[in-house]
Image (cartoon, helix red, strand yellow):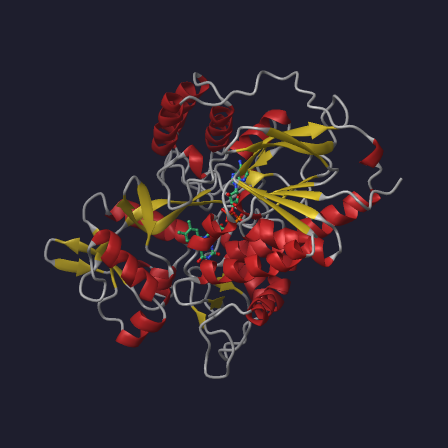
Length: 508
Ligand SMILES: Cc1cc2nc3c(=O)[nH]c(=O)nc-3n(C[C@H](O)[C@H](O)[C@H](O)COP(=O)(O)OP(=O)(O)OC[C@H]3O[C@@H](n4cnc5c(N)ncnc54)[C@H](O)[C@@H]3O)c2cc1C
């Protein structure tokens, strides 16, 4: 029996979730879009710097092929090449469609989206909307989704959280829907569907002190890991080179600042030392994030590091970086037009996550993953500007394949069960969460070693709760990878090793 009436369940309403919902609606498939907070509060709104696409409007002969090559190289050849090829080829069309939707990109003199330099890429290919790229794109996509809400194709459930997955059979191989918790009343709702798309963002809750959103606790991924979903490459965590501590979190000074000409220097007594420009004459301040973060981390042991934008022309500060300037005045009481800002590396992005194939399906049949919660496009290190792209493109691909899967599924006549004979679902206590975050913060730093990872692992093994098990997976993966590759740097194994040119996959 074909399953045409079934609704696809999408968990998370950031760029990946919204993009998946739009794809379902365009395919005339109804969906339910569930999120722990309204879309306007998703982390995607915070993105400042831009979205990558080889539009080739700057006379530099850029191409999707070069975008593909830069992405694979930055990721140290761990990303899925075919998936990355699909993403980079689709990128120009995605940016054009966003412009048509009304995203207010900064435009060049020909009316095309203006492009800026971003780290690890020699060509200008990052389209941006002042310092509000994420907000602009989210506003446009939310608006598009609303049109389908009006026609009943999309049902939105805000302030509802993912509780657990249901299955068709006790072996937990095939997804049958999920349980959702109403965050205000505590009521548990059961939704039956053969296709569920997880788009719950990165595992920022494992650390707390990151540039990311506190909404992205990592709890959905932890619960799915408990139930048998595979996690890939959790050891690859992107430290953004330029962050500032602010209110228990890290405030980002976007790469856009360096893309527009901002310079890093260390204060060597009274002398400014432009260490990145000296060591890397070709890309200088725009080396990939892993390298820049490590250089700052090393230099900082002896000298404070600053980002200097005081030499940038007023029109660049006003037209391209105004949001960064305003944020620094508001939250740091510092005017970037007059003073350099002290910076240090901070946790920003998770390259790893739920393991999915090119159709974005996980090892649980019918369970799809897209966006930052899914490790597919970035390998060992992500290029700035590629995650907005990966979230939009991945959401589309997941939506398309979830629709196809649902239509072919015969599950409509089946029933959904919790089938949970595993060690009990356990919510981590506040004290254990704090210890987990502190421990991971210490052993999963910019530079790692066996002694600290081993000590961290022992502490984490003593903690109860599903989030601790996810942290344990992350720590074990970092311990097992006895090499240095991309964002994972081991001071006791400083070289890249051919035998480790493979993805980590963990199943609980
Ligand atoms: C400060 C900052 C600046 C950035 N700038 C850029 C940039 O310029 N360019 C770029 O490419 N990338 C940038 N990034 C990264 C990029 O923003 C994210 O990777 C991307 O937006 C992730 O989109 P997403 O849809 O996967 O997740 P998110 O936008 O994080 O959305 C996650 C959704 O899941 C929901 N959710 C979470 N847990 C649950 C749960 N248990 N149950 C139900 N719902 C849940 C949340 O409410 C939310 O709706 C930046 C990130 C930060 C933090």
